[in-house]
Length: 356
Image 1 (cartoon, rainbow, N blue to C red):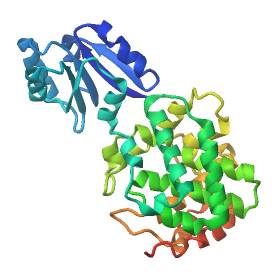
Image 2 (tube, rainbow, N blue to C red; image 1 turned 135 degrees about the vertical axis):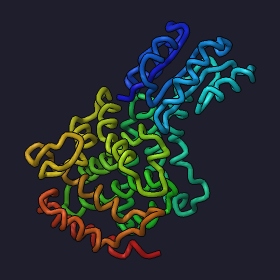
Image 3 (cartoon, helix red, strand yellow; image 1 turned 45 degrees about the horizontal axis):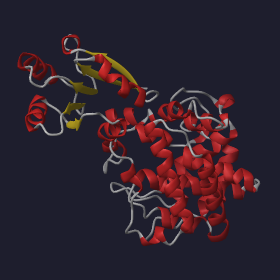
């Protein structure tokens, strides 16, 4: 869980914020004098008297030691230009108005996840009801994770049924062609994995109900990315080591977001937290081995790896289906070899997807 420090003159004023962000942040409340005895953290909210100049001088020096990319948010009165100016002079990255709103605070801390879904000029997506439905559902999934709200399982089931029908009727290639036009790398990846998982189920002749289950899993698998800052999540270039360490936390964040979701099958929780685990124990976040990895997780992991290889990124061309499938083969003991072999016809449907 994320740690958030709230520095306030009156701790009682933070009760509303604590209730709004319960389950999302571990909130520690301190006074200015208590805070400056330790080092600044990655996320700090100030609700203090911005007229107390001696206290502000101490804060300015303290905030000068904040970590790179730290978020420092001050609360100010809407009509006070002086408070806004002082907050930014102290080192604020953002200023919000009182009374504080938890949703707005999350948007400032992580970025506005709703911006991921918006793509109104995309004619290809507008012409595909199944893709548009999946995008709307992903937006709801990400918003739920970001705000700690319940999932709309019926909506996910309905969108999953649409994906199954689309792949049955139009094939995987049409799905890939359409979803790779989406502007968000995060949404593009989730949609690719969903289509690949459905096509995988179709290839090994599982029931339609099981293909809908695979579609549900594909849309849900990266829910934890809703809690990764957008600057990292949608970075146009490769992630550095520190950014990758943050990104790898998404599996656990996804589990945290869903741990109390009513009615969610335990296999979905297992899939969300373990879809980056490998059979040889070299994956993350728990390093579990083959005996602890379910068939659903094994299938989604194959779709996840393959989807990442064929998606479009600004810093690398997508691999062809054949090249991507060879990467799966080269991963050897990390993946289920029987399932990888069964996936080969699915990969062949995307072999020409790198062109265009």
